[in-house]
Length: 463
Image (cartoon, rainbow, N blue to C red; front, side, top):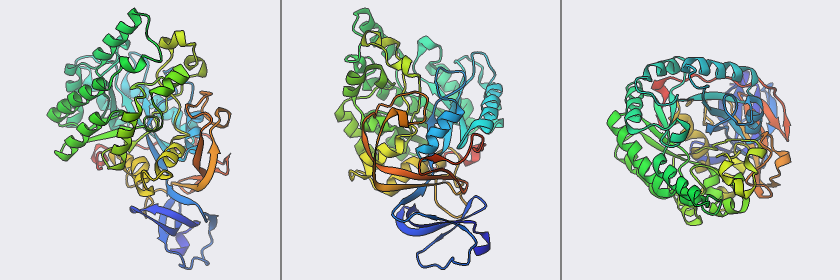
């Protein structure tokens, strides 16, 4: 093995195989070639040595829910978003790629791939955000598979934006994609219900931070989740329900899994750390959809994370410019849905989860690394510290604390919902394919280091 080794990460507590133990990670040619117990003699190896003493060594995070860049109002581009990702311990992002109205799927996916290969700091894959629903337009989805894209975003909300899929269009897409073993990532809110409630509050002049939660109730998520699961089961299509906020909807996905359906649930750090009180306090800066809910529902989502019901945590990084979010309260309606999260996700999950005894490190890795890699066809290359996997590693100090300040973050959005929070667990290094990308607060690789990860249907949905 010694001749294969070019890097040794020594002395850390390594999270691998559902355990945490002291070990040395041996790396050769960008791959993990060994996981060595303390005392194994590697003194003869002509290798770079990285001292991880006192640090946690975990797999690089696979963030399956990231928005930015082209054809949207998001302020981050490939370089700024993936730089923020690297500083947050995220070594692979799966981007929701979309095009301008009328642009063919194959064309805009190629555009995103080309842009990413020249500007991404971390490795990346793509979800295809499907075009506006139009009966009979499913044939162009084949171009996505040919581009190595096997997962597809569908909205059950936002009729006024022209992107909401009714049941006919949803079932048509699910059937077409299910026959090809694609995975549908669904935004599950009853869009007509939300539009109706929003219109009522607007008509009364009461669309405000205080009333925002009432315009998108948890019932809208529960109903849409049940409907999506039903249609996906009929179509025999794998289903991944994104940014889930309410325990009742999460339970529906879990029950479907237990019944043999290929379905997975995702929640996000903001739904585990923030509540509707933050919307009242911060206004548009905390406006997201589905919304931040009550403390009782937040605690219920934590219970689902703790008992294994939730499958994945993704950031839902959606970085609009500060000016589009920090509007006066009377203009709350105009504030965009979304907030930046990719750089703070690990710190929030470690602080609120591991440090508070809610989950252990193997569960953290399962949520952030292992399961998203398996669901989206990136395993065994990504998501685990195992021989043969890419040497994507995160080293962080579990005892160090750091204070969130927007000027220290790397998204161009210029704000954070966690401004002023003190988080425990500070990133020391991010390693991608054996090369140090971030080290002690310094970016060591340039834009274009990241590689595109094409996927095949056969490899997806294995969690």
